[in-house]
Image (tube, rainbow, N blue to C red; front, side, top):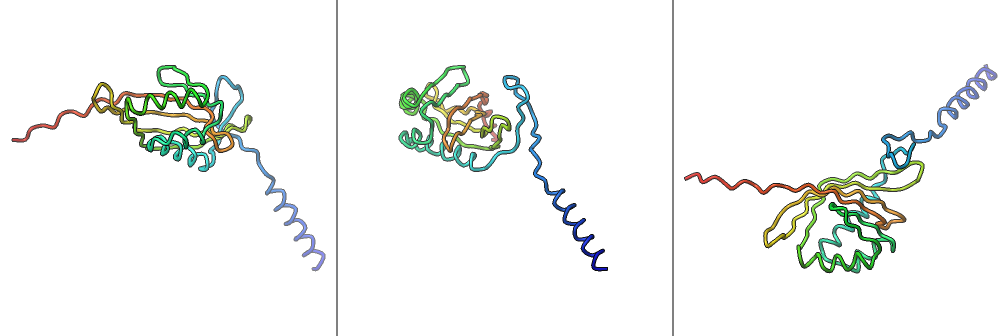
Length: 172
């Protein structure tokens, strides 16, 4: 009986150990510029970086914004315009903030990770209220951002114009 008990324990231990072999994440999705790349859900640490970055924009904290991005930050706007580097970004923000008074409200965010390149990203939806030609307008921005070592390194802005709300009906 002792021998059978030892044999049972040995078989159980081997089976249990074999079942706990780490599995490489399979991922999903694709990116044609990087054949074979797959993506998995990322860490909310990445989402937290993005939320703080947007808060700094809403609070017009230019120094804080600059401290939260890499020196080589690259931004592609919805019209295809590009900003390369902190200096160019700071100049753009110093002109844009007083001109259009943008305010962001994040309504969803999803961190994800590129498996083979080991890159951390966040994609987030934002309502953005701006002053354009003296009128307050709302845009919907989808922003896809790469975060490197806790810093914003690159992002793309996609935009949808939101039509104005219809006038309220007079009920009298």
